[in-house]
Length: 403
Ligand SMILES: *Cc1c(COP(=O)(O)O)cnc(C)c1O
Image (cartoon, helix red, strand yellow):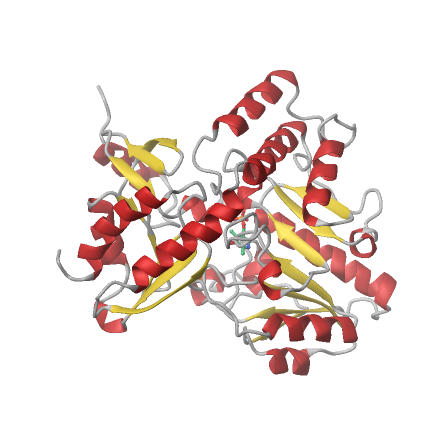
């Protein structure tokens, strides 16, 4: 008996924890920018698994690297060395201009690892009194789902009911350098911030914000930790979003597209000083740096650069944003974005973005509403002009009230 979408949805509903409210589309296959549901209907993926499949679904070169490595060696633990890890270090360090690399698995683990490293750096290098280290974060941040991370979230859904939380965090408004400056104390060891707030609805800070933040961090000896887990690896039309700001972070976090969507792989990148504080036994992960992850990540980074995906993100992102901005819609409030990280914000009277995402789904475009009134459009970076034109043919009637 073949199962239909409704059967899978009923099973999920019965047995799964209901911590997501997905669109009711049950996907079975993906290739490039396209995905197919179990009934064989085709959709353009405009979410890219929150930017984890920047390279497109099931990229053949990443797939080949994964299969080849899976046949040879998958996991050694870091108790032994493996032949992929050193090459992964070399390639990621060269590409990003970093001096030290710490491999982890999920994005949240990279964030947690960075917090551990900058706290230790604060005590051992900056001279902060033991137990007093402070990290500054931004309102409306999204850095993951662990207890520490949700403890400094300002989203009541993310943190409500999960306390008590770890101390040592201060929250300041995003995009306000003066507020950041005012929050710095002699015990501040780091500023953890997204270059563009993704989950908050693609919030781009004012011009000059990060230049000023960089100066303040340097002046006050505070590590600037950029969470590029979503903005990094080509999403905004540059390898790292920091390039738009003309600055360099002290610590950079990457994840998501680091594996092209095949496997959870994340990394903390830094100068020698910050990650240099971690000594044997002080941090680790059974799966972090495993040969399968490293082989997959090496291929994922290679195709991103070899196949011109970062430039394509800049070119097609500008084209897509221009097409969206040209729509004559009285429910649209603003189109904003960088590269292929795009948001369409609707007027509150439109009645929420979710219903428009459902209408788009019915026309073969999968997009995700975020924070009520915003539709996020973030297709894989391999998208072409014809596919954007096709997407616009679906988006236009939905946003102009023709359906
Ligand atoms: C997705 C995301 C994370 C968390 O990554 P997980 O792999 O889901 O743990 C952290 N920071 C940002 C900016 C993200 O978008």
